[in-house]
Length: 222
Ligand SMILES: Nc1ncnc2c1ncn2[C@@H]1O[C@H](COP(=O)(O)OP(=O)(O)OP(=O)(O)O)[C@@H](O)[C@H]1O
Ligand SMILES: [Mg+2]
Image (cartoon, rainbow, N blue to C red; front, top):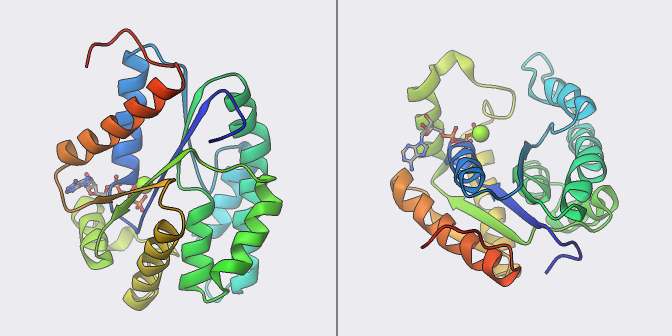
């Protein structure tokens, strides 16, 4: 459990698994219920972080060093944690982040091969130990996720990370699953092949339970 009165929720998973769809749906539901809530994303979440995001996703930056990439994500995260996440949690809000520390463990630790433990340690520096109360890992075969993105936007629109080979994305998925096995109390693993509605029902059930535990339950009848 976090040391703050608020509730910190993250969505993780491979490209196209439905993170943004579910984060947005949760935001709207909580807002409708009158719960104070902020939706944010990584990389990004602050003006500085959004500039770092542009550098990271720019397809012109081919051959970026794995360490450069990691430190850019961590720079974005340090700002995000200190300037957005912690203040909002201290104010008793729900903070939803579309990706957070687990993404670096999976992408840079696994995908780029820097090692999950190394990335965990550096995440600790970036976040000063802030951890999500719950992390929804939307588990999906990356081939299916990339197909969804292509169907949604067309092949030409891939960013620098999406353009990585399938093996990279398979390593990412595996390390996400390893993380979930290491911290079963924090992770809720959801089969992302399910329909939007079915995924949303699982997210809703878990979030409602946590809100209840925190005494943050709203007037809505279940
Ligand atoms: N449960 C679902 N079943 C099928 N398609 C879905 C589902 N959820 C979302 N989608 C569709 O899949 C595509 C990717 O969804 P979304 O953008 O939410 O994924 P994401 O995980 O945020 O992707 P990215 O990694 O690119 O940020 C969209 O076109 C979305 O409409
Ligand atoms: Mg998204």
